[in-house]
Amino acid sequence: MTCEPFELTASLWRWTGAANGGDWFFVTIDGDAGEALSATALMHRLETGRRAGWGAVKVEVSVGATCWRTSAFPSKERDGWIVPVKAAVRKAERLVEGTPFTLLLSF
Image (cartoon, rainbow, N blue to C red):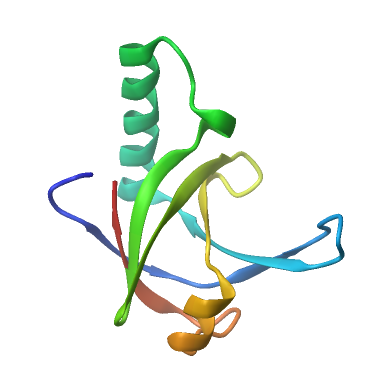
């Protein structure tokens, strides 16, 4: 994990199309944090000689009083990285699709 977390303003967006018909919610990570994620993924590949599954990087995310561990995934479609936000977090922090909120990202 990085020593200093990135503080970002993000908005939830919805992906529909899962095999079970469910929706998934994500935030997009770009800018300095996205570049740092790309550098971390590259360093992992250089150090281990292999790429993590789907190019993922393990991250810790905090929104309000809620903190969780998940993975960030590279996304060409979103021109950055995407991080899933599970229902329990959305409910606990009253996050609404399209409404900006602040998050802290460490990796």
